[in-house]
Length: 390
Image 1 (cartoon, rainbow, N blue to C red):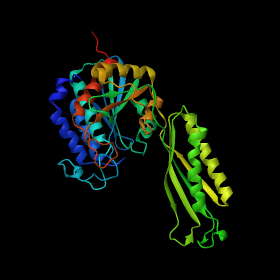
Image 2: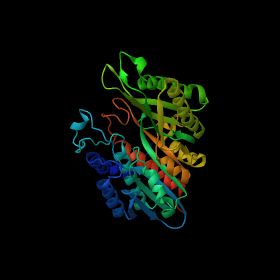
Image 3: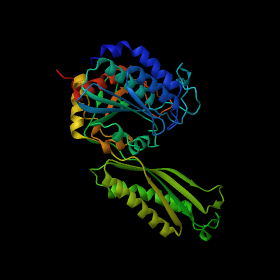
Image 4: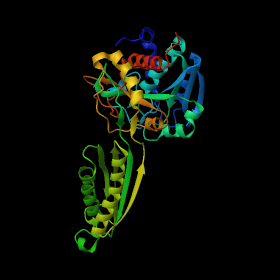
């Protein structure tokens, strides 16, 4: 792809920014240093800067006159995990044990800053650009909180776009697809209470361990037998906790997990079926059950018209390396809350290759070669959406 020369020339500076952010990771809603870093650089570039949205969120806004408006969003938070051996020996390794930019949000923040500063300097668009630096994407719903606090009322935008690095795509490729692109994300916990006793005399007990095991197996039938085979859904039991020693039947225990779906109908079917299945197993085994089901992020749905516009930009930049056939992901993204309020799309930029690994892995690191590629794509998207007069 043809990298914008200014972005190529400044990549050493932008790489230093990214590595500084990587060395100072901050968990969701605690991104104080990161927010200050972002706000300072936006102000230097001439943006009107607003801080404190959703606690640590930052919004920059710049206008070149009459015209439409566009929003670009990046996430800022790190994960509560440690870097793996080798990665933690790099000069830019995390300086805070238990915190790590294991998803590349340090890179996303840098890419958007690079694009924003270039656009502020070039003035190669006509209208209003809003850059949104969101806190707490990793399961805490910072995107929802920004929307609830009036993000689009305070900073009107005609369309909004987000993006993410994607290790499952090779470096130098990109993708965007219309419709459902990432799954909803729900959590559940099922607590079962029976009657404990001696493991050598189980007939005197009501065993929650057996009920939990049966419920775990039975829940797998919800997707395979109740969700339309043309729909995508996942139910995973990821925890089972019961008992303390070998010769005691426990009186209580619990299981927990996650539900993902690519459409709201499938999501509702699994939620209702989980409650019904658990109740049936509990009744059959003479125990009581309590279900705590919590809905999290909704399905991320890309607007067809805005996706087509973004796809045209990426196809022009990447040529045959544009991948519109990349399948939807069963991971979740709280950018979905923003897309519920404004049309837009979520773009993926490949950073996979030999020796790479998936996000949320202790050995992950953002590939700094991606910074000018993503920043160029964001610039061209803004120029396409808000063409300059003449």
